[in-house]
Length: 302
Length: 258
Image 1: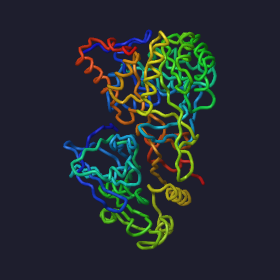
Image 2: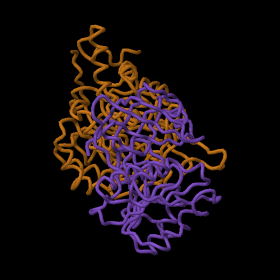
Image 3: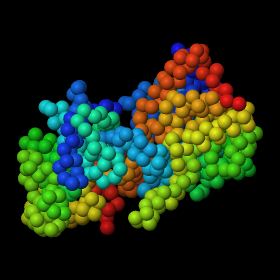
Image 4: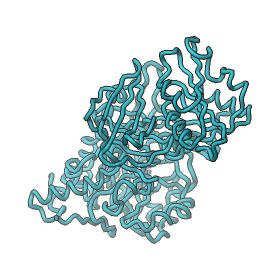
């Protein structure tokens, strides 16, 4: 049994496997199907200051080795989360991390401050990269100035581990990563979905209600891996890698590319217990290759 | 209800119509409890074009034979692959998902089950469970032509069956909502599953007749567990997940007042 524990600033993960926001609900939905406390963390659904209804149906389209979604941050708002959801998840024995989104730096900061007060939420993941909402989200994540402004506002009011989730829909993701590092982000996670589109040629209409959506799944993995590798070389803070990870081999690639931890997203829809299998697969690989700790492989690719 | 991820064994695949197959699955262990109206998310093969699970409603559960029946319309790439399954193949199933139809509280209740096309599937299990408690269901089943009426004999073994076909080749001619039954009789509750225009017409009838009505929706979905929020339906309570809050909804909750 190799050592699997990793740290992201003050956040201690028993293993580097987490589930990605928007793909694992609040964890509770999967409790019958896998031991939630077996993974390093669960990043719960994107939460905003005010409730959001999200975009109209249809919000999903299957594409080759992937899917597009344009859910648009449907959630009941941070107050509902604190009052009704937090009590149900606070005793799950793993890191319950909240993904925070907003439409202005002040929104983000206020939402983050309310979550700062929750004892059993040790970290947030700041979503400056949602491609499916007009007022905010990715708008902040595609420029250094926008990304900096949100992280700066949140950093003043959030005192625990702050992970910033980056958009791949940019010219140079390393530049954005460095900008948020400079404003005090403790970690960056990448990638959020790639903006995409699909058309029903018989109906001559797009398959999604707002025409475009975010592409996820194995289709995006090579792009994600390349970006993780670039960013890991560009910043000193730990990098969390995600994008199309479906098995332990995929996860090990991300670790080798420089990710300290990884998130599993779309693969949860294919196999709700996949994250435990990825954890076990990483462990077996390390054992069979004579590695005593996962740290021996993190960032081995120059 | 506890959910399970099971590799079930294909016992038989029967082509019951040009476009429909009846797949019977079994397991060495007793199958979990499932309710009429619930569904299963099936892993087709994980290949690039059919890599998300496919939601299929529970057609019937034969407890004695330990069988789960799925009536599948082979319309897309995923369901066409399911139709090619052979006895002995394994199928990875996530089940049981969603909420079922409201069951009668007494054998006196008069329940009408209205189905069209492959939407008749969950009504068989519903009717069979009702019959088991001594409440004989009335089925109102619609199809384009006589040969498109699915599993008619087995429906008849559980209750009274009324039929409409669009070409009049069997039963009354027209749509289900044109059937004389709806003019001549009153029911305590209606459960419906089928094409959305049909269900909306049934909902209109129910509102007029002031009869409780539940409809089973089949929005496109990914996770099946209420996690991804892709399959939402607009309701009086905002956007709700068809997979978790449905697939069965009381029509009063749906914004179908057209």
